[in-house]
Image (tube, rainbow, N blue to C red; front, side, top):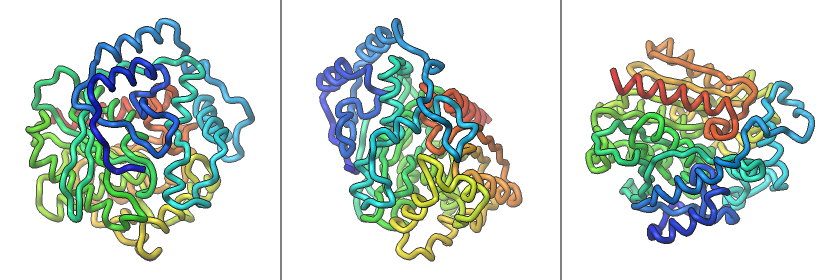
Length: 396
């Protein structure tokens, strides 16, 4: 998996969009869906008319998410799983990839992702991708020991200054990238009317704890100092993250407080890794859930930490951290997820520390559901909820 991206010309972008727009989901990996180890490139200019035309053509004869039905019985761990969610899990299993805990990190990054499953189901059912009038560009920024890539999403036609969301993707600090989570970042930019900066922090085991945490904070500092250059308002910055990224977003708020720099106005933490306790109620209940199970969480921890004892470091075990004086939080959890209890415990600890917290648990869906709004109704609701929370924070 590449942690850097090359620019492509606008003409190449038009060719990719014209030929593969139907297969793309929110623009995810549109130019090379067959190679799981290749990320789509960032372009400084996007021909929006091509994207709109392709989407309109599909929409005229497209299917509907309600048409998507699972093919088999409900899994033992998910008796109330929603139909579209089950179809995604079935599609992911159909690829026949070897379980991640049996792989090296390099091998695991080549596995199919839930994003691939959503994309293929949308193609199978002829479901059009949503029209999101957002432009993207890529940039390398300096961090301690190297550079990281950021992708900047900007609402089309915006003149600024706009509120800014610094976004951190999931993947257990080991796998995935900003392409896999492109739909979340793009939808947030579109619905909130904000500049979104998605951070390709360096991955483990090549870069072990606390590199991802330090990269994430360095990117936040870069945004504070350079918001105006990306049409952003430096006084209106929030942080959002999913899974490992939910942990990182929370840590950024903690580090900003400790280093006495401007804090984010709000934190949205989606099914965060927040506790070292792998014997919690949800871990026990969803020990074999998909796409995330207990064995994968143990594998992620082994690959990111230098020693397993580091899992109790308060930067990973957030429920043991000092949470006083943090900005307001929104926590989003999936019901069928080993990390549901992590979100519940984090909510409790934040409230005990005097922090304002809103939390919702979405029934019948699994880990990774948040970016599936084009297919899974609960994901569309969750994204709308997150966007509303962010708008409220920016407008205070």
